[in-house]
Image 1: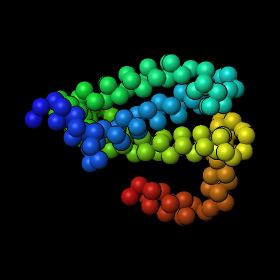
Image 2: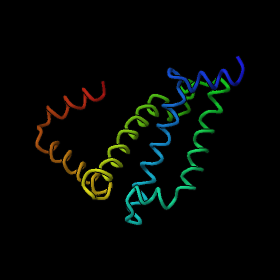
Image 3: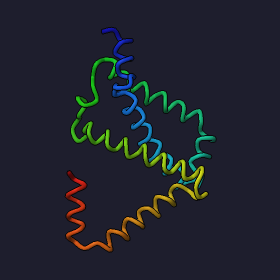
Length: 147
């Protein structure tokens, strides 16, 4: 198959590229956005407005860096390297996509509070729930989560 066919297959509906690229971008956006918000106090929307060119370059770099191996025939599931596993990358990417969407939409349409404050409130709520559970429930929940 030609490189164009390989690119079409990777970017297709059943291809691996969309989830890989979006997951990697979401992980980067979540960490960078929360870090910048913590340092500067600017909400995520304002960060995008202030740094749109740098964000566009980052998207281009991550997208091209993710597509080149896929076009060459290297599937993500074969790209395990030491402690870096493709299953963990997929799970972390999915969680990051959900978390970034939740924080960005909450910041845009919900309460007008910083995303870092929402993260702190969520951690406090989870900690409170865990503190109210007994030891057996925590072990059961951990076992279910690990399955």
